Amino acid sequence: MTEKTLHANPSKNRTPRHRAREFALQGLYQWLLNNEDATTVVNNIRGAHGFDKADGDHFSALLYGAIKDSVALRETFAPLVDRGIAELSPVEHAVLLIGAFELKNNLEIPYRVVINEAVELTKSFGGIDGHKYVNGVLDKLAARIRPDEVAADKKR
Image (cartoon, rainbow, N blue to C red; front, side, top):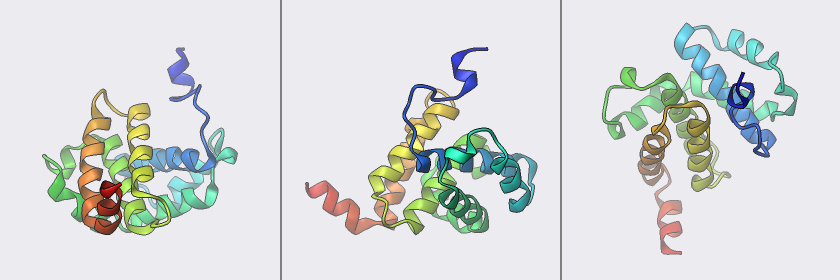
């Protein structure tokens, strides 16, 4: 067993909120592949090793929110992807749902933080260049959802 299989980021100092995003990603992955209801997914994930170190409230908000709003969230990023939603890898799909949800609903989190967290998740759990793809899509989405914040950031 390699170090990577024990945990995707064993050496990183992960915050409770980052851990919440990791668990939300795992839950969305499970939901996308198995089409289980949100409550079943949440119960499975809450029992996972290390969940006690995650921000449980943020995890619940992300997972329930991304599932509940999945159709609308997909509609926001569908024009920005170069393929059909069904052709996205499950990891990229789940990370884009998380990123879109946070950009839309967590205005207290700077858009750059949302994008960086999504990129880090994709680097840890996704394919080789998936993080570049996610970065590009969320960067364009941030400009649509939070135009004033993005414009102010570019002036700096």
